[in-house]
Image (cartoon, rainbow, N blue to C red; front, side, top):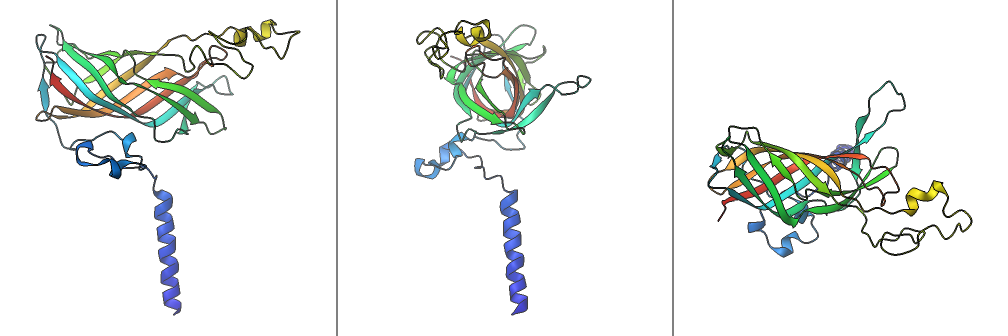
Length: 277
């Protein structure tokens, strides 16, 4: 009897350890082999498709035959925010953050083109799709950093000398980061860019004080970000590609009231390439 109790206790400890080690995230899936009932409320919709780990093919491209990029998906997996050190002798470094947004962080159904020039430089141009998500991350000190994760108008290029898209193809380029808040958004004091008050009406005597100028004069400006796409897998038969990405972009400025923080996002991506007609 005593041995049985010890065995039960041991099994409970093992199960608890496995549960603690599990990240609780849904695994990748193939959207062509799953139904709506199997995906709803599971978190799978936030996962990008994956291709065989050992796929190392290539897809030919030439100046007179560009490629269309369809069903592109980017799945963020790691988030970092640049933090200034307390000691001025040290350099600023990126601090890992924990995502607070639930199961709505991936970009998908993105379309684009890849064209080649005479020097073998490949250029990827993003066209449209579900190419933005609103995300908030939590830093170790408790600070919450919201940002507009996107690849809008991404234009990225490779080094010269490519005649195909293969597992050595790396794209690097810049994209646009729209304002986190829209022009019609009103802050807690009723101030906005296209509507609302011009100043903080709760402070009538000092509403136009220079201390509040930045918060009073709203700006929905578009900023810039940078991204690298490293292709690691290519399936020439299906036209599928996959790899990893790293993006650096500014965080929300609350319509110009705050200085943006530098956010770095790392993750995986998937896409299909087709001859452009």
